Length: 625
Image (cartoon, rainbow, N blue to C red; front, side, top):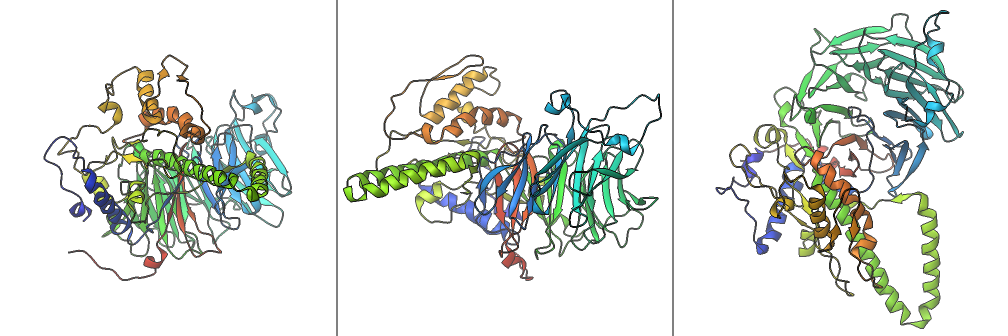
């Protein structure tokens, strides 16, 4: 069991801080704990964090907002009122389509085709525009009947033909959309609305919309999710705010093929296995049910998987996804509302081992670490470039090449002005050097389900990252100091309660102090190495410092300084130090022999963790004594 490998709970109520000479050994222990024991069947040892992607969540329950397109090796995600894309080859992000409203959901098809769904609000730019009402064509109203207001929004975008169109569809918010190619130049879309209807939309010529069917699955049941079978174009699976799972044939006169009563309320994510026989559905109470569609008797599921925090909002299941057909790993991933993703091996899954799976945990400190480490790398790269320029200036023969480099830099700046480059950060450094050990994340991120459920369900509470003070202008061989962490306590919170390791509590402030400005000043001064800030409501000033020719951390890492305010405010809302998730996805490039699991973090970055395909292709097993 995992608990046998954890350090015993300290007898003292105070945290045990490892001495300086033992930190290197402690870092190696954490890496061994993470990289070997906890990922021996699932993941590789070299995960990455892609900082500053900042996916948005525009509805607190709708979190299937990270989707991968294998042919183009691009990941789509929502960001404010746009659908953005992140190239997984170059890690360059850019806007894919700009909308005049905040999309609550979206779906994509080959060649960059995207459909989105949302809600028409008074603050939307579309509110004052004359938008076509597609709902009227679905249900013509008799003369004299009060006309219902259609507030649902549906958009279609085809970049190849430069076609973009938005219409009103449905009386209320559109919770989910799905789009599939229907022929060479047409598409079929399905839209779930809170008015209890599933709208089937035909898009024959890329810009003309036509409702071909409107299905009321269940009276007064808001629909949340729809997906089409990968092996049968006439079979849809739909969930909503009830215990029912609807299997539909949208082409039939009586479309309701079967209704499965799950016994759990509010179904959200739903997914078909690539073989079309296995159906997975997740519910808001923290339950995932797997059904074999070839043998559904008495509504009994094939298997049932529980959240680590069932019955709580933080543990509500939001999304479930199977590994794609061309991926041999045969895995199921399930996301909780806050900070956790379940890894389920489908090859040996039954009720005897359903609780033996593992869970990835995404703490808020990881985003703090990634933001700082990204700025740390940029800072050292800029310093290396400045030192190279100095050496170059000493040699007159290299003056022409210097001018060329300057011109190239200015050209690259103009080219990338509308795009953002994200450099993946190593979460765990595999180097044995002492500096590399200090620059690694200091905690494992993959745990046994049993440990998180029954032993330590708040393991990242009070686990924060504190950037080191800003150093004086560095010399040629003196770069930015590596980050430092407050170590988490691996004890049972029910037995031992350790004081909070938050630096705010170690200062003169306490967590009940209502003076937020004073607490923020402490954070800013800690980050900037003792700078002073003027407190006050709604304004903040920094102490004037003399500018030198050398870049400072504030110059190169100004984004982190601006982000600190948001980060601190978000930390208050994060539950037990874990980040809210925007989506999960399998990233499996068809031309590369590698697979990754992607985890989108709301208003933060993206975790990119490789699947250990070599280990999963070996069916041998062994245990520890």
